[in-house]
Structures are given as structure tokens and as C-alpha cells.
Length: 196
Image (tube, rainbow, N blue to C red; front, top):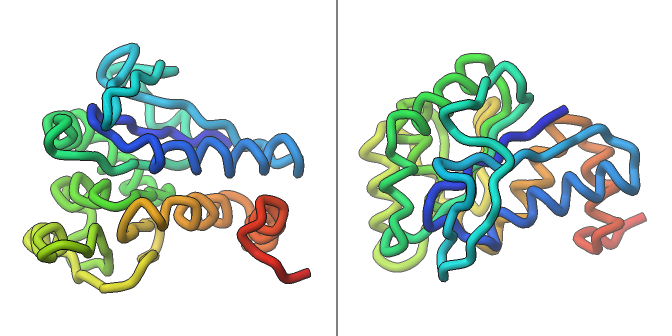
């Protein structure tokens, strides 16, 4: 299985790394065949706080049929996140994964390009909830039914509140790709669950 991680300029590294780590633990320690490819508009993408990250693929060369899921970390407007997150090529990728009923997971304002793409119209979703609630209002303007919960799943789509939710979105995506039991096993191994 392959997960495509869409890294738009100004993405948050804390919202990227859980996908890499959770899928890495699942693969390395539990034998689940889950790979992660980073994809951007340039060979290296500058994240929030100017950390440059090398990409595995370019948006223009990606074939959605080669992947089993899409993940979209959020980012900061002042670092240019929406310049690429709202680019029609990014929105087209989001639509293609959803049309194929493949999992589409986002963290924080990563839900906003999902909303702008049209895939959240009439669906339950959430996004950054702190401050004055402007990001949730923005999500609602795209037709989403905004739910004030940390992680919201509606069919094949996962959205979440803020950076703190990032690992839980990654575990939810792992559960969709493997099983709830497999995801729980990795959660325990990584210290996110203390039962068993």
C-alpha cells in the first residue's frame, strides 16, 4: 500500500511527521506493507518555519491510481500554504482520490483545500477550532457540516482540529488501510495506548 503525502508550501512539519512515523512503525515492526511518498510542487518544499524537505514526487507527475490514500498536512497562511493548497492541481488530486473512494486524511487547515475541492459538501468535517473560529466558518462556507470534535470521520474522509491531533489522524488512516486492530497494535507500541 502507498500513501501520498501532499506537502504544500508552508506545511507544518509536526503534521507531516506522524504519517511517516506511524506508517514506518507499522511497516518496520509489524510487517504491514505501507509506504509513504512525499509529493510537492517543487523537488524541495519549504515548510512552516522555513524547514526544507525533499520530495519523492512532483504534483504534476503523480498518478492517483498508483496510491491507496492521500494525506494533507495543514500549514500557515503567512508561509504561503494556500498558494499551493488551493492550486487547481492540488484540488484535482484531492477530487481524484475521493472519486475513487480512497481514504483522504487531513490535519488542521489541511481540511480547507478538501473543502475548496468540493469533496466536503454536505459531509461532516472539522478544522482548526481555536482563535475566533474563522477557519471553521471558512470550512462551513465550502458546504461542510462543521463538527466541533478533535477528529471527524465521514466515509473515506478524515479531518481534525489542530497539530495535537496529527498522530490520531495517522492512526485512523492506518486503520482504514489495514484494520482497527493493527492500528491499535501500533498505537500501543508507540505509547499512545496503555491497555493490553
